[in-house]
Amino acid sequence: MKQAEFIQMMADLLEADPEAIRPEADLFDFPYYNSVCALMLMMRLEEDAKVTCSPAELAALRTIGDVRALIARQAGLEA
Image 1 (cartoon, rainbow, N blue to C red):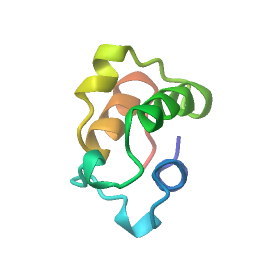
Image 2 (spheres, rainbow, N blue to C red):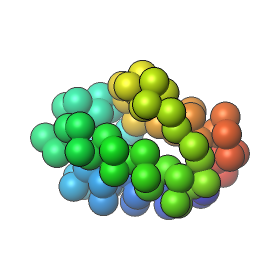
Image 3 (cartoon, rainbow, N blue to C red):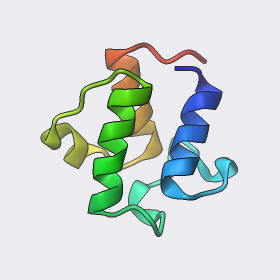
């Protein structure tokens, strides 16, 4: 998954401006990030990035950078 695709996926999911999608941005600071959004994130990771995410891994995600690192570990994120 290319960086631009990742940013757009996260912006769509979080209903945020793509410029707000920075590695240090806390997922819980986005108004639309809740348990339903977290489940949608897990589904999008599987569909778009071909990454499987366990409930424990999902619960450990705190920042945009954490999501990116998960993808990088499993699928290889292009810059």
